[in-house]
Amino acid sequence: MTATLPMERVDGRDVIDFDHYSEHFRDHWREMAVEFHADGHPIAWTERHGGSWVVADWAEAQRISKEWETFTSYNDLDGSGNGGKGQVVPQAAYPLLLGESDPPLHTQRRRLEVPFFTPKALRRWRPLVARFLVEALNDVIERGEVELIEEVIVPTTARTTLHILGYPGEWEGPAAVASKAMYLLPGDPGYPAAEQSSMRQGFREMLTERARHPTGDIISALATGTVDDRPLSLDEGESMMNALVFGGFDTTVSATGSSLIWFDQHPDERARACADTALMTNAVDELLRHFPPVSHQARTAVRDTEVLGQPIAAGERMLIWLGGVNYDPRHFPDPMTVDLARPNARDHVSFSAGHHRCLGSPLAKIEIQHMLETIYAALPELSIDHDGIERYPNLGTVAGYMKIPATFRPGAPLELPELD
Amino acid sequence: MPTITFTHADGAVTTIEAENGVSVMQNALSNGVPGIVGECGGVLSCATCHVFVDESDFARLPEMNDMEDEMLDGAAEDRGPTSRLCCQIVVSDELGDLHVTTPEFQS
Image 1 (cartoon, rainbow over the protein chains, first blue to last red):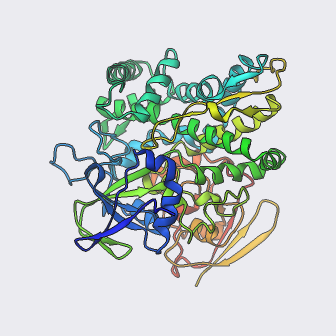
Image 2: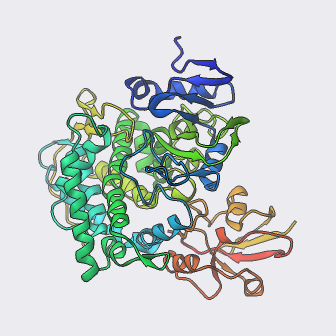
């Protein structure tokens, strides 16, 4: 069998050709992960996208994510700071002021959004998810056929995110721009640069307006919030809104799509999970482990250090390969097998780890589980047309889907869940 | 080595030998103690490691910071006067044996 991740020794270090934007990665990442772990030393250098140490060890991924004083998230674009290359590979030209910051400033910025994702807050969002989902299902339920991504999953997740944000106006525009920005790189033809720029200008206008008339939503919290005893700046507010809109639902769409496809291929497992809420809850995590929506998180060493005994020089970037970590056999025995009852399924790093661990993760899990359970109850005999599935051309940012067509036995519209 | 005794909402009791330098939350998860979730891994982002600390231990704990205080307002079960997020309680010989009650709900 041909190796999917050949490694060679160059100038005293293990080197691989690791490109998370490639078709090869899209089609073979799991086999690559298994090979990478085979010698028990999953760390190697790749020259791609400016060079990084690719790491797939679970314990080291936790350590790198938590030890921010050694591994910065900062994106030092103008070179006046600590040399950090930011949170994503390739380095982003538009800094993510929440994701690409370190404590204590990061803590203060994140604190403005955290109240919207506490257990009490999530109780307010659950009815929204239910309502938006039923509205979407009722648009298709009498037809007997559906395109699950655009007609059910995107409307449900986008509308929920944008509602919590307090984003005025229609949701379809942001949703479309968010998708394209996920699988195209800036500079690719078709990258929605103009639309994205116009949306960001719109964020600034919304922040300015909510500063005058706060309404209790996230935009208002960002518009009136303070960090370091000074008002959050418009640049910070815009960047944080950008992260919520552009990163706040495409990932959930990805996880839900992957789960629906897997359950379609494993109907016995689907029946088991649908009959047992606790199993379905664990299944959501196990499927997140097996189908990580996001490929990686980056950090930059600010001092000479080591990972798995490999010397790391100050200024070198770490690429925490989330799917690779989820396949660490020392933490997840028999990682290729999807075991819905896997006891430590929750240990996956698909939401990352440490201070930047996905703030929206509890909402995402609520949405994924609710969509799975409701779709299966509402659309009997659901059958996905696997030949019609269209995936993003690469998994570089998000392992997304453009289309998942399916048929089902049509029925009558569902009763709309109440909103308070 | 200090012990931590967890009284659960249904009355069951679990006692563990705790590791020093590690949070009560992490000690609970490592020992499979039910009733603690710790979704965010201990970065004050999720309020799912909520416990009611026994009054006799509460006063010995280092004071909570503003963020923990804010997060407790969002916990699934209403906070009480001795509520803490146990990712912020680090076990030590000085702190000694601890007794906490876990809430019925963490989400």
